[in-house]
Image 1 (tube, rainbow, N blue to C red):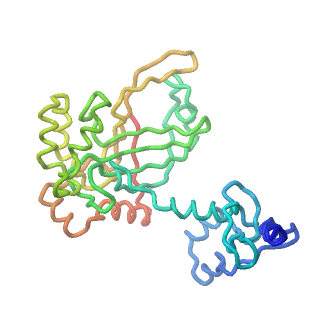
Image 2 (cartoon, one colour; image 1 turned 45 degrees about the vertical axis):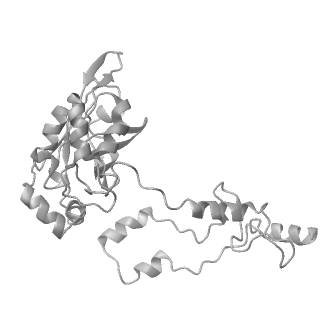
Image 3 (cartoon, rainbow, N blue to C red; image 1 turned 120 degrees about the vertical axis):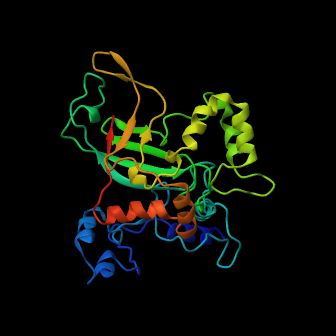
Amino acid sequence: MGRDKESLMASKNAPPVTQTPKSEMAGTDTLDRGNTNEKLESLEQFRSDATQQALRTNHGVKISDNQNTLKVGNRGPSLLEDFIMREKITHFDHERIPERIVHARGTAAHGYFQTYEDHGALSKAGFLRDPGKKTPVFVRFSTVQGPRGSGDTVRDVRGFAVKLYTDEGNFDLVGNNMPVFFIQDAIKFPDFVHAVKPEPHNEIPTGGSAHDTFWDFVSLVPESAHMVLWTMSDRAIPKSLRTMQGFGIHTFRFINTEGESSFVKFHWKPKFGVCSLVWDEAQKLAGKDTDFHRRDLWESIEMGDYPEWELG
């Protein structure tokens, strides 16, 4: 029994350096053979060939076999001491991440940020001081109330979350397409979300806030009145994600190299202008194409008609 355990455990160790793991899967050359274009060629620099690399665990330990469990003898029971099997099953059990409570439905795009001029008088952040520097950016747009399968053109607040990958570290600017919010005190947030979500007894409506529990909440929380006016305006049904403003909502403080501070607010202004749907258009589009906004963003980028925003 001991010899069987030792031999099987040894077989799970990394192969010799001279041994090259073989892969039966098609490589990128097979997939792209006879099917290349300018975009595929530009992506080639970001591809990596893993056929010459050893199989590893999540912790980087080299292994040669993740298809056979360590057992007692040739036909005995599996052993829990097989950390490779435990890790593989644990990874499998956690593959499906529960969708987030709010902002579940969204779409995102990569881009870059480039400042027009040196703003060193306001901030010592490098991405705001070098006009020639392009800082990588990732932006996620989203609705708030609905689940992942809800429609794009519902009357709702839109998330506008920006992540800038600066030399000093990642800078996250969480925001919406409206400059204010329903509550001032964060302790009310769970109550607000419970109120705006579908009615608990019938799970209606999906993606919208036109129901009793929402109106009951805002009637009892007067500070939400300003945000309700924004939600009932055209800003809640944008025509395109490309024609939507973004706001950091909160007031932030910039500090320059001299230690001087300034209070600022972040406004993302679309260069295509602000444009919204009318309610009848939004309702018809919800029935015809629930992916209207994400399709518009995807297709415009594919055609080279890139959206742009100016930060003010």
